[in-house]
Image (cartoon, rainbow, N blue to C red; front, side, top):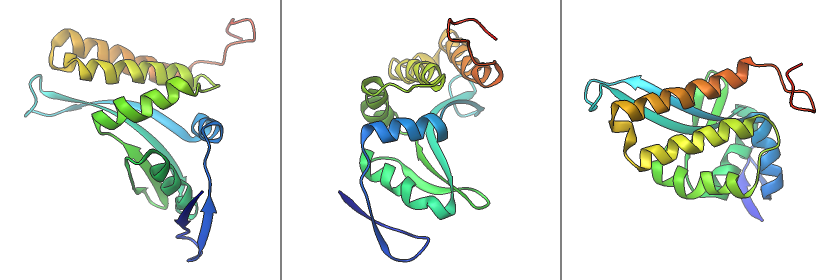
Length: 162
């Protein structure tokens, strides 16, 4: 069990997270994101930035701190307004902690496909492919594939689009 500060009520609470609960929570509240930002200082003029985030209202900040404590990486910070986020951007933490966790504990929704594309992007960074034109095109396809998941209708039980 981990004792965490409850920032909402000023007292202490006990939060025990297990892998199954985290999978369900991330299925609903998590985001696997691949950003490609203009940056003149970078080799190709862009920066590739995979990141894993979970956003919650500030009244539930304790759960974000619990995730940080569970994985022992990432940051909890203001997202915008009254929203807070737990965010992991570090390549080593993504590669060695976040990706293996979700490979061993499968997501149940179409977010699993987003994770698999995200995982592939993390692996491309590891191989330094983000520093080549061809690698950048691969990142764009992976990013676009994640974005398209948000726009497409859910598949029917037999795999057909309804």
